[in-house]
Length: 67
Picture 1 (cartoon, rainbow, N blue to C red):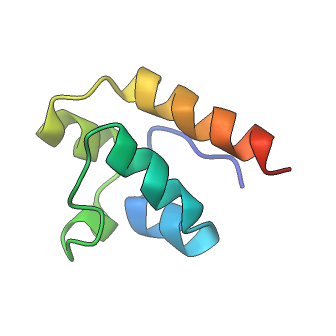
Picture 2: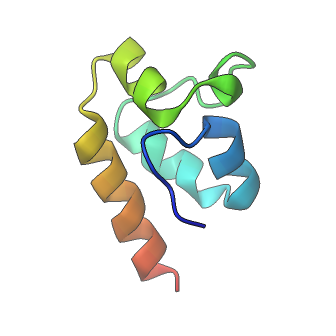
Picture 3: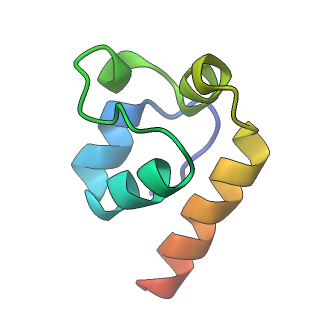
């Protein structure tokens, strides 16, 4: 699955729950929150004051490491 800034948190977690760990390590501790699953990565990063490009890079690094 190609993850972009527009990918919903719920879609990412459904695809690979390991991404939850990456999001939490980046400072997004509400990964299990019902409202977070309907937010895009970009929206969730904005709410938490995180740089979406940095978080996306961590997710892509994780994906490469598990292939």
